[in-house]
Image (cartoon, rainbow, N blue to C red):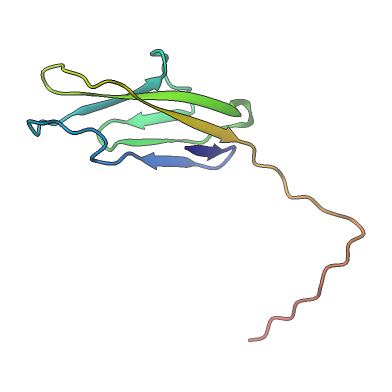
Length: 107
């Protein structure tokens, strides 16, 4: 997964990512690998299975995430891991001295 600084990020997990053989409702949880909580800018809604947020320039790098499903009786799946890469959003560059072609737009 990839997010860009200053641009809202959202990822909807597949409804078939975790399944229960008895067709029971599962609660999905998301943390950083090792159990640490998510950074303050990143949220996970268990009910809708949406991971979302807007990273800042302080968040550039990667976050290793783990997802886990739990059934109503407390039985859990093994963890599914994913890496979220946070990239920079570089400003556009102006190159002085270059002549740009003229474009005519006709109605």
